[in-house]
Length: 124
Image (cartoon, rainbow, N blue to C red; front, side):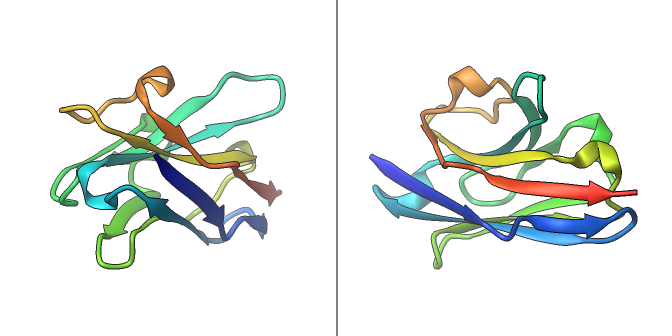
């Protein structure tokens, strides 16, 4: 079992930046691909970014490509999401998730473990 705890959410102005962190405890962090998802009010959970076990491969959703950067530090059991040039439409609860699968995946239902989420609000 992996426990995930997100932090770093808050209020930002459009054009600003925030860095989210997700600390993992429990089973070995480095065996999991990691992903970030978000859910805005009244909408489904949306894929944002994913990173492979070693950190050597990453994948981004089109709306955040070029603005967000996912990274991980396996020595600290932590995955990060650096968000830049934020837009009001980035407002959502952001979740990190761990996947024991073979390849990077973008489907929320395929991820095995989830954090509780952290709120990100971007004002215009």
